[in-house]
Amino acid sequence: MNLPKIHSITKKLFVALVGSFLLLFLLFHMTANLFILRHDDGQWYSDFCHFMGTNWVVKIFEIVLLGVIALHILLTVWLAITNRLARPVRYHQASRSKTHPGSKLMMWTGVLIFACICIHFYDFYFVKVGVVKGEYMVKVENLSKLDAQAMEDEAVSDVLYRAFNEGNISEDGKWIRHINYEERTILKERAPESDPEPDFYYLTREKFSHLHIVIGYLVFFLILFFHLMHAFPSVFQTLGLNNYKYNPIIEALGKIYTWIIVLGFTAVPILVYLGL
Amino acid sequence: MKFTLHIWRQENARAKGHFETYEIDNISADCSFLEMLDQLNEKLINDHIAHPVCFDNDCREGICGMCGLYINGRPHGNDDGVTTCQLHMRHFNDGDEIWVEPWRAKAFPIIKDLVVDRTAFDKIIQAGGYISATTGGVPDANNILVPKHIADQAMDAAACIGCGACVAACKNASAMLFVGAKVSHLNLLPQGHPEAMDRVKKMVCKMDELGFGSCTNTYACEAECPKQIKRQNIARLNRQWIGQLFGRDRNE
Image (cartoon, rainbow over all chains, first blue to last red; front, side, top):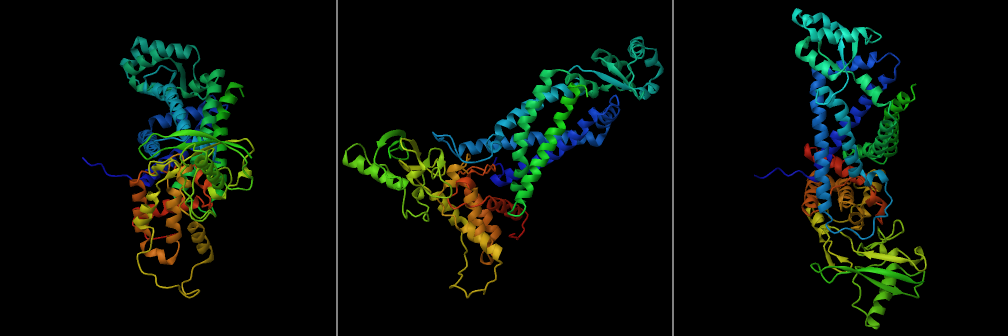
């Protein structure tokens, strides 16, 4: 079977297109993360996570996002292999050409970012899926949906009794918090209408109370900084939107975008750790 | 001045190459890098040390694009906007060690020592880097109107001498700057318009077929180009490639 030939520039175009999608997603993700900094006992953030976890458009978007990340990785690895083959014998002397450091390290920063995304998935997405244990919460209004059988179930009553008894109710009275994995399993099986979902607000704040996680997070964004510094103007160059007139503007926008992303994301662990 | 030279020696395309070290003395600071190699070759011949080092050269005034050596990690050496023949020994320090390598790319196989076969560039030009219609004699001034800024951009792109430093500098051995410059200098001008999209397609397809890598926007090519061809020519090539994908016949 003859596979259709995809030319080098076309491959690059796809990388740029999916890359620009990821650039926009990062902006969206950063804005959502900033909700954690509100002193509202996670009201905004929990509502936002509930919306993201239940809306069907978001569920489709989630699949698209995973596909886009996979495509970005696949295409860049494919390009890297063909590029490597284009110079079978390497130079003895390392290149001393004047280029931006980020541009030569894209593949390596990309690999490190992928590793960090895997950790991120383990910490949050897999908790949501239920593969990894975490902290959960239940919407108070969902309790009214429970049928008589569920209400009379001793195990369900124990879970709810403990939660109310310990006062694990959010300030706005909307959420029952601090439900552990075993309790979540009981609710899922015996009272599915309660619909327990991950408590990302608590999970995030808990993670950022550990110094080593905060430092790891900052190192990740240092790597991402170099990746984005090159990625933003690269999208314009590859899509042919760069010319003598717009080049300085695109370069400046790239720097502004990167700093916004890095400062926006890193502000969360730093301020949470400092208790501000 | 005195130098220690580590020069790549390779008998032919199939032979295994290696670095050979030579000491050379009494080199004037004002002589060019190629003149220094001439003196080395005289020494190698007269003292019966080895066969002379083969290297490409022709005009020795930076316009033919024949010379091209990878010197201490930079194509054409440690000066900006010059070819190897325009690189002078005053840019080195007395007693320096100098590593000299040929252009390394799958599309540029080594013929001997520092000489590489750059026929791949000719093949790209043969694929579409021309205007097929007979354009006749030199037209009268202002007979074909070309805006000044377009003429300037076409002229800047036409300055490419096809030396291959862009390929040599690129970490992916990509020829995008070369193809971008050749496409730009023809497609920007009225005479190049009718075949513009066809030209882009044919030249890029040929470039891929010959085994050049893809551009990853590192811009080492722009940094090392002796004619200082700009990255915007690559952006224009990308733009016109998208245009031909959608069947558009626009050049700007």
